[in-house]
Image (cartoon, rainbow, N blue to C red; front, side, top):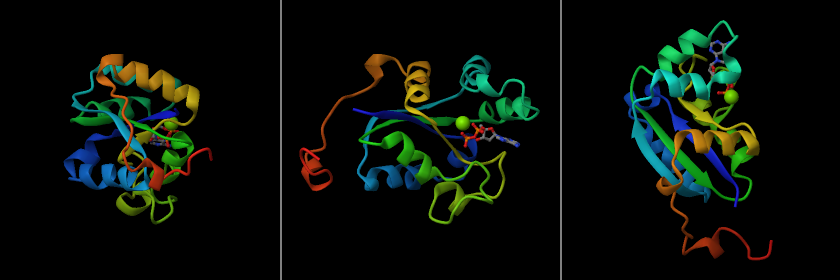
Length: 152
Ligand code: DAT
Ligand code: MG
């Protein structure tokens, strides 16, 4: 089953938005299979944002993501990678649609609250970077037939 890596950044944690953010994925019908709060090390931050290392905002981004606790999660479900990106909204919160997390709670690209994997392959890489296999729990929602039609 498809999985994605979602992280609530230090601004989302400090602003008390953890519950509301988790609730959006939960009520959508996705399954939480990994969850922890961590202080991100310089090394993990640099590995996670490696694709952006040449960008002018890189050092600010690393400073920000290591500035306070981050809530790291793995969510599971059909289409969860692309759907998660829609739930999160555009990178710049000013361009993000109302109804998305960034659209509802943010105004600045450097304080955009949340990370979500941008593709299935990226998700697999990010999940193995942030989580050990034994930290992930495979389980089935007992109400899954009310969320997903069988054989669909
Ligand atoms: P996303 O987080 O939507 O996948 P991204 O991968 O392009 O966006 O960039 C990673 C993070 O870097 C983004 O969440 C916020 C920061 N960032 C991106 N573009 C920026 C910019 N022009 N100025 C400052 N920070 C930026
Ligand atoms: Mg990205």
